[in-house]
Image 1: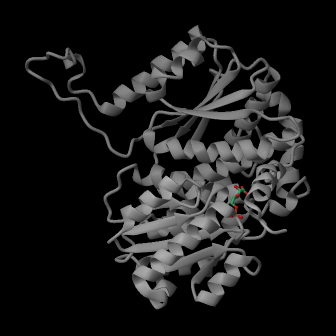
Image 2: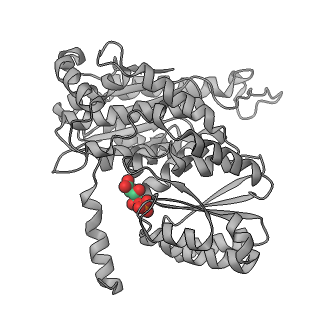
Image 3: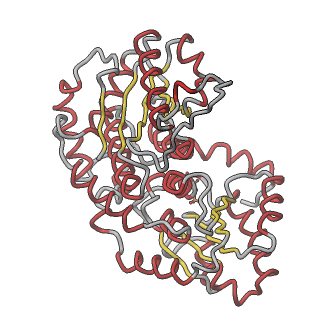
Length: 425
Ligand code: PA5
């Protein structure tokens, strides 16, 4: 399903030399004995997730199918990135199935919110607010404004159907508000942190509303759980990736650029950046996660990768089968001199760009490249990929003696902002 190739990684150590440490940490993860172990709910989530709640999500999506023309997804960070990464990967950037996902509550930008309000006017809207704490300011502020828009547009009674809250099962202001207003609620499990939560109602509710097959996501997630539940480095590509990162950082590379050749994977790289960055970037340690979409960014960042300071390695996500393909047409006049490609598939051209870039960056530029190969960009593959990166993140962080499941650093800006906003204690 997913292959990992380190042969272009310019690794100076042998991955298999880390078998002993990986075996020990595999046990730490699965027996939940490491730092942050109260947030390891995702490890056996493929087996333990609440099937009744899952069915309730599927039924809700069916019920709202004709009303969900615009689905406002109101959340930030772990309560936002996963759904967007999945939706764009699976449906592409211009889906035409009659559902449009619009993301709010992830910025304080006044212009953005006002434009969203203009954009949704006259359209049939469903609002899914997602917040574990219920107190995240970006989300709460946007929700207050959009809730008022919804009530003015549809009336309070219909809002009971059109507004859905995904939050803590018992605590928090959002849970209390949702119960009081009579909204349908879904639970964010206590033991799964934001950046590991896309396969919970956090991601599944908006994805189901957008017409995505969430059962196939869970099936892929389960398959990866089964395939990757081994400490054997010869059998576990996620652990080979985790170890390769550590080897490359030992060689002095402090930046990892996640590269994909499909624009519909741009948000997947944003999700990946949060997963790695928030899990690993603490105690003065970690690799800075960066990202690029090639060949687009070869015309901008490509120069630095090729000839700039040797601070980065690339992790390239290649995709076997594109969502759509096409053929280069021939042209009698050939004024653009492009007939040499006539009859070739567009995806083949993209793949040749990858091959040429790999050679340029590794052979000429001496930039290490790790390659992760994915079969396609469908639901099942997304589910599989999630577990792959979750387990790889846990392993790579534990190898660095880091708690992969907390994010103490994100509170600092909030404290200062609250002081400036005059928030009461
Ligand atoms: O990973 C995390 O914990 C964060 O990115 C949170 O998901 C984000 O801050 C949103 O938090 P909440 O769901 O409480 O609104």
